[in-house]
Length: 265
Image (cartoon, rainbow, N blue to C red; front, side, top):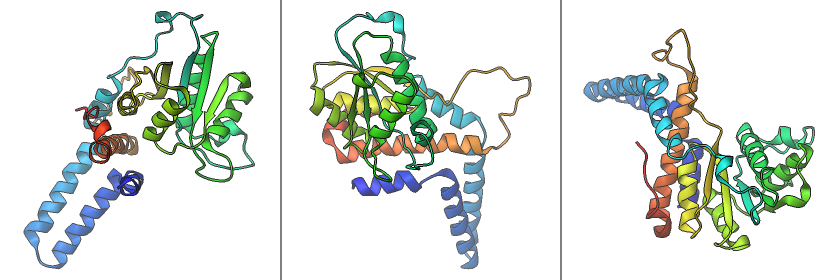
């Protein structure tokens, strides 16, 4: 079941779905099933308009990203006892030509820099980096550690968890290493934060959310282009599909996690 959902999350996207429905429409037309083919073509046209223009993607992504507010440093004692700041893994490419920061995906780099920023606020802040070996010989966590050191972070304040490959496993690995009674600030994408919080809460720990990598940002533009289809909007919808599939997996695979899982419409 885990493998099925991981493959589905990796391969399912708006463009692939559109192509599959179009192929179904052409096949139905070839078999002289005109009502079916017509219905599929109308459906795919409506689906394309809804997912490639700004309105629906912005609404769905905005709902997810607004569940938790940005981290507010003024609400915390900077000299408190040890506090852990975990940056969830977000992908990397093992390429010896590149420096560790350059090997990280933009998602991972955004999470790492926010976690480093927060960790520097606290005198006893410990940076926790997680992620297994996805390519090459080094783990995601180790590459992120090397990147953090090159970006000027103190190596003695970094702990790595090299076995997790999913958010659920990252939550399990953290609790296994540090227990449930420690204080944790969790850093991940704003759109991913609701699901990440659910996995950590299922392990008996209640992190302080620190969302980053916002997809939807307030901006003022003299020209309204919301009605124009774009690849960017399709990519936003792909992030939505990924989160919904992750929630569905949590409901179907783990009864402990499912009680914390919810969809955000």
